[in-house]
Image (cartoon, rainbow, N blue to C red; front, side, top):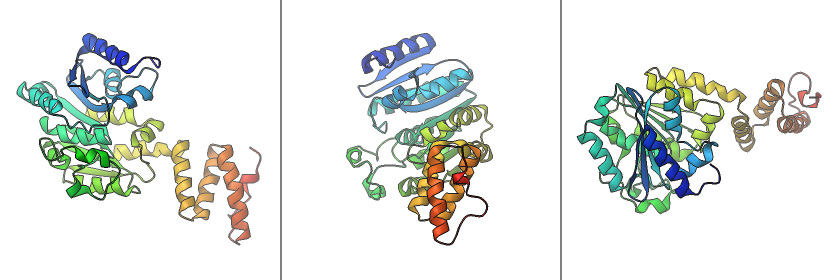
Length: 313
């Protein structure tokens, strides 16, 4: 699969659609893959490059998780970062509404991260009562409202004021919506604030980072999160239990150590490194702990107890 060209990979996805339900292009920039398996539907918005980089199978995450749990799946694939702002995508969801497509399912879950999280919110309006899970979504890229976010300047030329435009308004018909984001990333926190509604739960996760889907996948939280949403059992409490998995996630711990270092908090960073070395080991954290123990001892504020960093692994 790794050696396939983009066109060959898309052909493989089309063949998968022929077996499971259907796959069809939505113009030149998007495709849709539908798998008909059961009365619960997981709708995911995903980018081709991210799908291909995720695993050896190179299957959409929504498709794979739904398949593992016996659910139907509807995956909208963007061939590039488009925020799914395309009249052909609008027309496809209009068609689903006209056909009362979503009414055939007992439960519908919309999911996406980043630009795909924006799309999950924007198009959830077509399935009233749906659950919406969004990872660090943008509310809009309209310059009048989000001039403070200059990360996606090239995309500001797209129209975010016509149909399915302002994502927070499109959430009004959702049954429950959850926004998972890193409050230390100012732009993500501000977009999350725009999403705030009585039925929208904000789940701020410090040091989640700028790629939340990758961070949550590292602690094996994506699959249970979406499985719970599809089962109707997902809650904020359930998410926080999953989030505890970060205590053993090396990348998360490195981000946290980096944050403490850049914040000039050597005591807390040393405590973190000591905890990691004691529980998990790791030469990088041990070497950093040795340096911090020396620094704190010279400053007259040594850590209590023996110098763990100098203890043989």
